[in-house]
Amino acid sequence: MKVSRYWKAVVAAVVAGAGAAGTALDDGRVTGPEAVTIVLAVLGGLGFTWAVPNRSATTSAAVEPPKADRA
Image 1 (cartoon, rainbow, N blue to C red):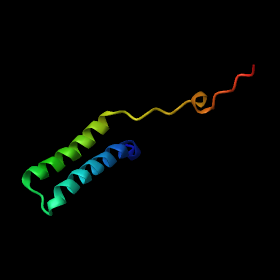
Image 2: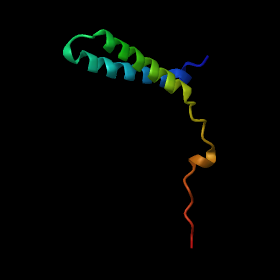
Image 3: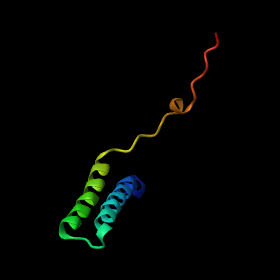
Image 4: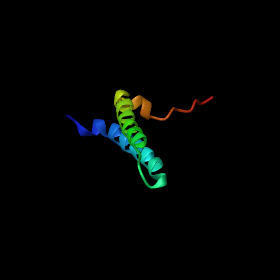
């Protein structure tokens, strides 16, 4: 198992959870529905990001800049 493959999903889950928690803590406390929203944000960020495959490595032709045409 290569951990680097999963970092984008972990980061997405943390960012989604932190955003929901920041909104929930606006009044200084977290209610039940707010806690559910935080959990769903973490799971949604993790699940949806995990489902999208990483981009494959680029080929050398794609890395080289296009050559200018000489007229």
